[in-house]
Length: 540
Image (cartoon, rainbow, N blue to C red; front, side, top):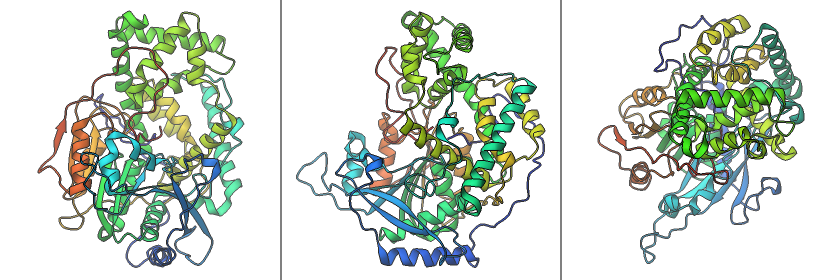
């Protein structure tokens, strides 16, 4: 997920006032058309339930998992109009106590999960029950995932031919020329136009408020009187909206790696702060690599490691590796190391091998996607773009983006301009914008909730967790100190997992905000490409 917060530890950023199209639409209050439509859709879903059977072949899910669909209105103001179907996956609770085979564990209903994005699919989530860290939770809960609206196979969005979207190699200038900026702005405008041409008026209905309404309908279809929900990354923003809109329907909620929900941050300012935070995380990686120069030979200081990276980028600009890996592909591969420190040994090994004359590890890690992978990735990007562009006002004048990000790139060059190109279609968006919901709950309005955050998370900087903690009365924050992996629940930190289990299984929270020691740093040895982050790591 790219969206996050604004003010980083490196210093405050003076922003130009947003020159955006006027926001349209209002959040779902108790008397508006969308609220009535949600109630109608939820009643229908409760009566219909979910008919679980085989999962879609294209999703390549194991036979033990069952799938079904839930109908939701495209437009909640018109619940009798067009409907789309969301695909839902489930693995039933095992009821087996992993610590005592003779004890039968009582069920606690469904635990519904959203992995973030926006644009990521949660259909694979029920598989975490096979991991040791999840077995106690999987004993008590039906693990339920779903593909949100727009994410294949749930009425999938697409804005561009996937082959064109992932065309490489590409440059990645940290100080782009005026000509390059014009080129990328034209591409962003064309992408926004492609979204509008392919989906027409339907495009306006893909936004976070409708995602929260969809969550309420899925809850009803599952037969749950109240929702037990876990969201990671963007999933925390979705959960926060649900908590504001449907507080009486909340049973338990876990917010893992938190997007700042302040409506003034969503989404333009969030992305600026994310770019600043990635610079700090990039420094963490360079320090680690320098400490293990005996293994990788990339330099004994962060500055020397940076020089090695820049040397590789320059070589790739002159001659792309494998014909497809240029500076942008290199930057994209190392951006994942900013999300998950499990990637550090593999990226360092690939960079080292490339500079020593073997490009294959780098091609394997950063090369062109398969045709099937490109289709899925473009779909994910289309949903990401639609949701964030629809959610809030964005600057419509490129001069605003240029001014703010030129200033930011002076101290945070690694991610800044890449983040601009990812979000710039929102400057040219043709659908009307929503007005972000001001999430705030008072004492007694919402059951206690659990907030999890890593102190040096770059994708969702720590200020977002502090802000959500302030806005949700009765919430408790558990911090993984001096760590930066994005998505910490169900990972290698036993302290974090202990708080997660205590809350989900027994409803127990710490009396006050608390912290856990960091996970161990990765071992400096080449290995096969890891699975990103923890067992439920959100899609970057």
